[in-house]
Image (cartoon, rainbow, N blue to C red; front, side, top):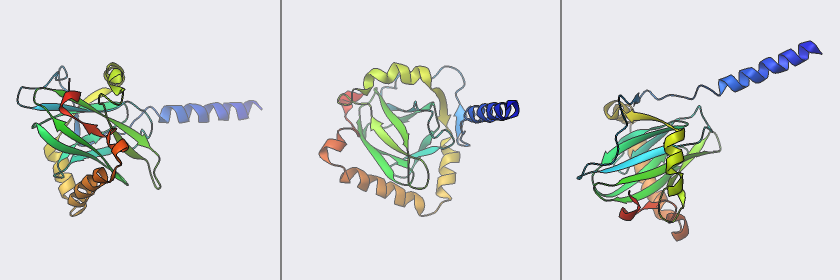
Length: 198
């Protein structure tokens, strides 16, 4: 009986400790010094935040409408990109290409939540706009408190994506089509307008 209990305890501890090592990306770097705050007057800042520890072994790559690497989203992590004002699509590249459309204003900071969910063959993710309609803006302090910050290595990440051949432009095209196929109600959850920025 004691041997069974010890075995069960060992298996439990092993399972718990296995969850402590979330996957890390070869294309994200630790942030040296304080995290950038705000956006310069000619750029918009977009923060991709993944507060969940679910699917902790899975990395979700985020691209834009041109197929440009924006960053890899890891469990309990966040990263920022600085983009030109105007219209952009943010696409999470998994089994599906779920998408947020953003119209960005200069000098403002926007947030997009990355949420893991079950897929047919492996975990996939959805993107949620932290906008005035969603009520998610109140979660921003928790997002920042509960996640660690990294910064994208754009050149290395883009080189890897380019090595995949036609998969990249196809994913970008599919992401735009995915957004266009959302219902009006669904679009309210995945759209950022200039006023959603802080």
